[in-house]
Amino acid sequence: MPSIQERQVVRPHGFAYLSKRHDGRKSGAKLVLYGEGVPLTNLAGKYGTPLYAYSSAMIRERFQTFDQAFADVPHTICYSVKANSNLSILRMLAKLGCGFDVVSGGELERVLKADRKASRKVVFSGVGKTRPEMISALKGGILLFNVESEAELSALSACAARVRKKAPIAFRVNPDVAANTHPYISTGLHKHKFGVPIREARALYSKAAGDKNLSVRGVSVHIGSQITDVSPFGEAISRVADFISQLRNDGHQIDYIDAGGGLGIPYEGPQAESFADRVGSYANAIIKPIRGLGLHLLLEPGRSIIGPAGVLLTTLLYRKRNESKQFLVVDAAMNDLVRPALYGAHHEILPVVKPEMISMETADVVGPICESGDFLARDRQLPVLPEGSLLAVLDTGAYGYVLSSNYNTRPRPAEILVTGKSVKVIRRREKVSDLMRAEL
Ligand code: LLP
Image (cartoon, rainbow, N blue to C red; front, side):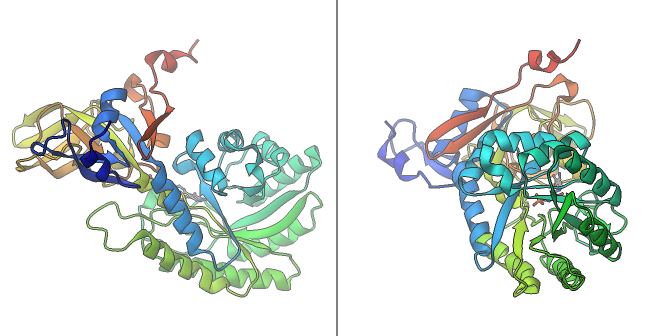
């Protein structure tokens, strides 16, 4: 039985330092990072590190906050599966009434495995859909294909004819709006491979309308990811709203506007604004240009729903100094979390057990992989910690596990979903034998 003191510190959601008593005595209480009602030390002790842990209350709460921000207009949230595609998480979101944005046949299979009935809330995006992928999506009866080129339109029409279904389509238009984010994840400019330029899209809509295998339903747009200033969203949607009026004048029936995803999260520093406030400003920017147009709004958030709801736990293996440079070698590496190596991304790192005497040092937190690009943090101010300490890399719920690899033949971590005091392994840790299974 947990002591009364332990029960009092249980929080309904999220990750926070709480005091943990092992023996019920007043002295010696330690501040330990909890995931909901579970000390992360317990998770690491039981399941090992590196380990991904998610808070289900946080996922649920963020989904609901997002949903409520758009309560004023008819809308469907299509969670972007690429951010975190674990089946248990998809199942949980489906139960909350969420739809899904998929970009591959594999993601569609995951969604359908999580919830057979989810297909009517699925949008299919991506510049390189293959014919077999289109056919499974047509058979599954998805809500909308976001078509990105004329060539793709022809392929989709042929697939629809083959399976005797009408393909519901929107074109993903490229609004030529700049978003202030990392160049690898900015998508709304003409120099990017995504979407069709608005001025060419009008002719494509006429072509689609004349094709009996296709049914024109909407217009979609997605300008990039990790965008924290909401004004580019408003600008892109304004351009799309003007375009929709033009299409309607041309006689097209446009019911849906798909605003894509992209709302950023604060990875660094104090978080002055609440999620509800941030998502509220985002909703205002998007809703304003389309108010009164009688459109059904589709949204494809990924990171903003799941990013802050996950942590990556890792153990400090060795302290190491090269001349003046201090390294903390941990057991998680770029194969487990590639964002720092790939985008120079910042993730806060916290000791799971707060040290009592805090002296600070500046160190690089690095993994065991044989590349100098293998780091989780560079020149980071951290409390001086002994070898064996447990660290939590924050905000790794999105684009963490999904981007992991087996580089250096490293089995990927387990994933744990915490709900209050209950703990569920939602993916077991890989074994080296799993890695060799497909090899002949
Ligand atoms: N819709 C489309 C068409 C997308 O391409 C994306 C993300 C989303 C929705 C979801 O965006 P979100 O709400 O999560 O920002 N690996 C990168 C992010 C890549 C985003 C790709 N597309 C990272 O770790 O930052």
